[in-house]
Length: 92
Image 1 (cartoon, helix red, strand yellow):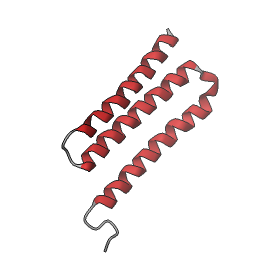
Image 2 (cartoon, rainbow, N blue to C red; image 1 turned 45 degrees about the vertical axis):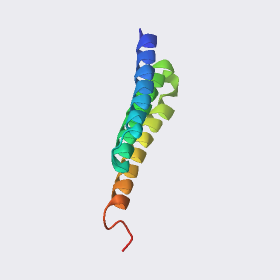
Image 3 (tube, rainbow, N blue to C red; image 1 turned 30 degrees about the horizontal axis):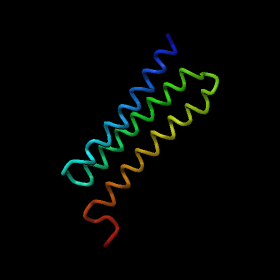
Image 4 (spheres, helix red, strand yellow; image 1 turned 135 degrees about the horizontal axis):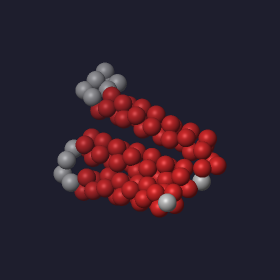
């Protein structure tokens, strides 16, 4: 049962990865494309890490550290991109 749940989490993560690339084809702004790509990539990567955590529980410290690092890194990167794209983004 745990094996099946692990594969489901990994599969959902891969679906999120591909789903995040679909807006790149559209005519929306670059910031919209970047936002949707980063959110889908974060959720997909976190889902894959949870699937790995279920698959190899003996590596839980490393995988929990990866989850926390992924959440913090992508949140901070989103704020930095938003700041850089704002009207006063350091080019004063």
